[in-house]
Image 1 (cartoon, rainbow, N blue to C red):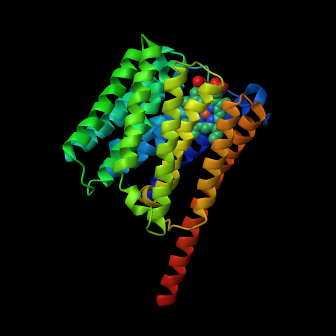
Image 2: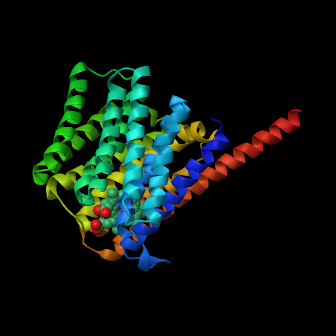
Image 3: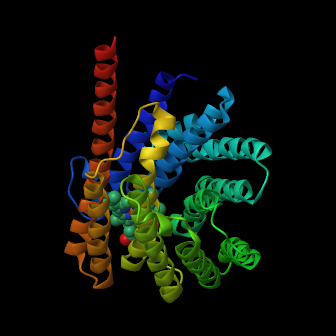
Length: 364
Ligand code: HEM
């Protein structure tokens, strides 16, 4: 598939993300245009099943390089749009679940090409997304399925980091500990369906083990001394692991929550501090394979990365002290960091393209 044909997927992901930011900001108390009719419950589904589902689905479809594989980002993207436009209908959750099922088939096809634990972990991540989305269809409250959604990017990212850290010497015992942590997380998710207080704490212990494991073994630790992109990636990763510890530590402490300040802190230290930090720093590596555009690293990328983490600290401090204005301003700046990230990435890609075209013209 040529890159131009990927534009509709990218557009669907961007519209879904804008809808997710809008509903999130209204939910935290900002009176934005259309606030009165905003589908507030769509925020989580749009962010995780819609936006992440479409973008990660597109990346995997590109990797598999089969036309049918694009059904995964197509269905997830349409599911995101439906969740935004007809939020009370079951159409959105059904499309999102179909997208997740297609994504699982893509992951299984990819795992036949590369047999081993890394693809297995990614397939488990895909199953977690599917369970979460099916929960939406079944009408589970979002707080009871958000753990399944969180496991999807957590396992996907950790499997990718494991793959990239394959040149680091890691003992068999350390691997056994990591696989044990993954098994504990899965067991916790299952137990959490009937005994949430026990289940969420099992998952929290598993995430703490995983975060400390990666802080110790991820190749990022060695790359921090290298300038340019390697250091940028390492900074985003290492800070991301710390946010995973904050999220899991809070969950272990407060147990199962259904909304409010602790719920906000647990979800966003994980989804913004860990997942979006990874997206920000991996964008110069992954976006070129999706868009076909070169995205050379620029020091200015530290602006959106820094804003994301500082504003998140602000928001979480608001959550910790039960102080709404801090939470609101932190959340607004979180959204601005995401917008800046897209602007910086798009402008860098356009700049690189213009320079390449000029270079070609000059040498012709
Ligand atoms: C960047 C700006 C963001 C804002 C302003 C925002 C705002 C909010 C608010 C106010 C809540 C409700 C918390 C509560 O119950 O008190 C929430 C929940 C949630 N957020 Fe965000 N969020 C943002 C980013 C994200 C991101 C990046 C993700 C995931 C990738 C995400 C996923 C979720 C999920 C899954 C929930 C739980 C939804 C529910 O229970 O209905 N959020 N968010």
